[in-house]
Image (cartoon, rainbow, N blue to C red; front, side, top):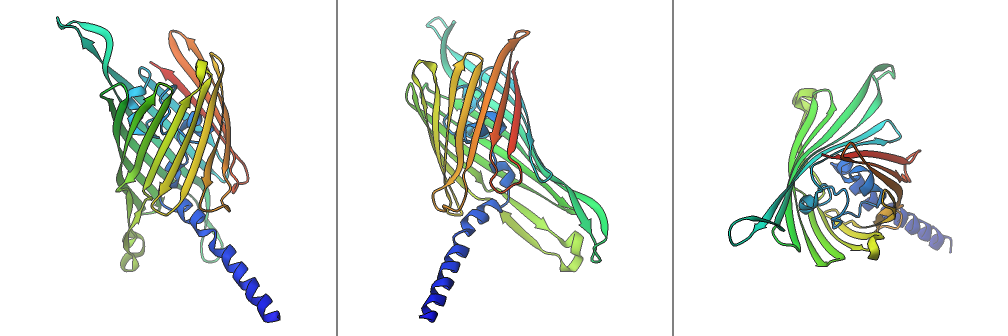
Length: 334
């Protein structure tokens, strides 16, 4: 009887040990900072933005969103994080519109096609890393810096269909004489099923990887190896509520590491200049041990000096950090 009890305890412990690796594995893969989301609006809606085509769109979620850019715009974002981490955003977008022409070749008010281009930067890192020697004596304070530069283009050849692509350049400064770069690509499309229902598809970090060379640091004991990013595949649906009341969106994301993540969010238009947002992110269908992130936020907009200004805020829970995340983004349409 005692032997059976011991065997049952060992089996139960092994199940607990091996139920978690899917969560920790994807979280520890390269490029994790670039999978946290972009700007306050998207984070407040649980990052379920693959098919959201109205408002302040971000091609980070889908390059096919570029044709839905409103005029030319700039967005700046800052994130308050615990554990000496940093996460900042910059995005500059420009829209292009081609109008139909009549039989005489004159331009009309009807739109023939739309296109857009976006350049953005995501900056992250960790500061105040305590460096010590083998005797435990403090040597110096270290920091890391990881950055993503992306150029995204998209076109809307018809009223219901748009597609786009993004070129991404990663740069990671990890330690003295230890840095790496990588190049990757995203592709995406959006199709408007009905006037109020849109579907989007996205494949991200195609060919993204870091190449590390530790020989400058360890000489003949060094090594060369590749660190591959997870391949992301995502499909999203967004529904525009009647009477311009708001948006409801849901995304389903899979990765090359076997994770299946559900994201959902909503945006409610209280008044013309005020929007409330809420969502859930990282709901892992394959691992119930992974605690989802709950998200909340708001957006305030106002026209000043003939310019459209927007302030967005997001609150994101971080179950495995001592403090939760706060994101502020300021945008202006030029």
